[in-house]
Length: 357
Image (cartoon, rainbow, N blue to C red):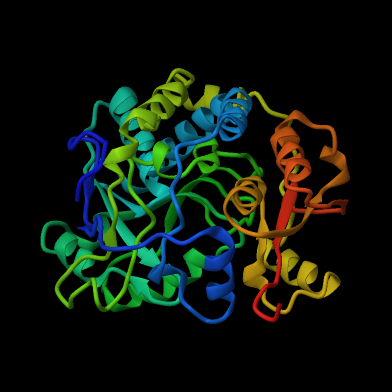
């Protein structure tokens, strides 16, 4: 599979299906998803980022490059302590890939250990790529594999992972992430709700690779899950600009990464994020919790890629610069903002129900 990443940074265990999938506009895709079509059978339209998108991204990078870098440092140290030098990073495409590269680079910078790094597909409701797993298990011991993602919103992918890896004896469902406000994994850089700036953009900050696709007419029984390479967007590619911007802030020691994240510290809420999501669904009359996307990263994606109904912001952060891009995007899209007390998250996006309209 092609990407704009260097081959030494990641091996993409994906089938190249460039030119075989017709992308669909946001509202049409949203209606199909809510009517029962699986999201993995479709792709959104990938645009060259507009000026507004770029302003959002640059603002996020200014506010979050440093805490992201320090969180990468913390989770990398924890990975080395828990798994040691034989670890193999297995990033979940697509959001996990830039994070996996950052972890790989940090481990090399601090420990002078070159850890293998692969990208594979996992799809909610359809599972992990079995052919990719078989590929990895022919080359490594099961205990070496460590899954990597960007962040955890409410934990749906982790639930999928826990179910799927039961088929692979010795493979741990543990996942390493930069941010885990849902409070479900120990291998994280922070339990705070921080934005990883790459969530503001699509393929142009993810190696020019699409989200993964699983359709019977495109993916055969021996194939990896598929993805599209957007080579036509090469002039707008910011994949390594993002990596470089984060790496400039890499800490020199675990003590640095523990103490100098550069953001307001908040106490970690007790319990799990999914409990809060279920409570929000009841309060706001949302029958499908998949329409509730908690956390800064997920809320940003709702505003940029989905059809939002409203945005909830914890009143403690109503004027905080961490959320200024959220407020601006909501205002531009005329999406109502409601102040609401949140425990695990600083904000939450709720997708508009379209299937019955």
